[in-house]
Picture (tube, rainbow, N blue to C red):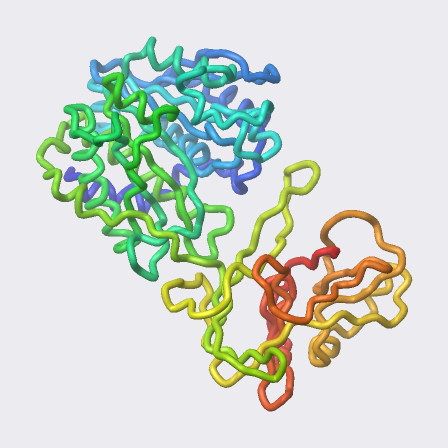
Length: 469
């Protein structure tokens, strides 16, 4: 079976291997332990407790195959970068299955020994935060090795002496694939080994393998693949592993429209990793040209969650034409199992160089900052009786509530202002919450509440949560 045929089979048959217990990114270490315990009974895998995190959570090493070529994959070094961890368990499901791909699995077993270290930073994952419990970015600790997780990763790496390494991360959804309107769903990199970015033999092999993967995965997401910045980072694991003789490939999972939990990008990871194993086993990557790797466009930070364009904006009686970009930030709840959105106005002016996942041309409409309704509301429970559409039509995006608990968000489609601390914005400002009113002929046509758009004429829109100001 050709590499392309294999990739298409994997893409189309993905649901057969999907690990259905992982459906959101904010899963915990305990969820991973349950899956590892399940595969302990499968003779395809060897399971070893590699060590412990700073807070005593087990970090496991899972291996498959007994071949000469060693491949090492590690994920979730940053606790809130969970896409590849989900994909690893999909890959494990594929490797333990029995079907028409048995010959390829047999080839993997005979030619490769594949090692997986999912969730390198379980303490960070518990809080769904990038850094570990000491506030250390583990991927900037490859030299000092002060964190338990970094010490363990380096220890395992030196013991394995792998031929290929896969450094699996998530990147911001604000990256585009080059100067384009297409978000970078995946970004690859063969990390440099020094400031001069010379092409060593190991880096050359990594770049050729990326070239192979770029050609294959582009069949599914043409124009949505980028290259991560190749600036040398002396403290990072990928750069150091490359320097120490392992052909290292960075894979960054980026953004895709309406894929909040990154399930589509998880699917791309699944296809990418298994195609990489096949190419390594058969050494087909050696036929690729380094020019293909060089041709992959670099990430550019040109994507925003929302862009509103061609709005008429008045300040002190003077008008100008503006675009407004909005970012929707995910804020963890206290238990870090869920999140709420907190919007911010990211930029204003001529934003013709930016692209929005949701991009609206509001030519002919005026824009102003949303108003706060200040009639007497004593308790949050009273909000359920309000006609929010009518409030929007009157230009209100926030409401004062006399007695309000101290949390930062609410489930109503309006923002809450606590007693005596009103929202006093009059002009639209960068870094302010995105609460906007759009008018035509002085009639409110649309409102934005905490970054979410609502059509007042059709009563259409999904304001996922308000915030407490």
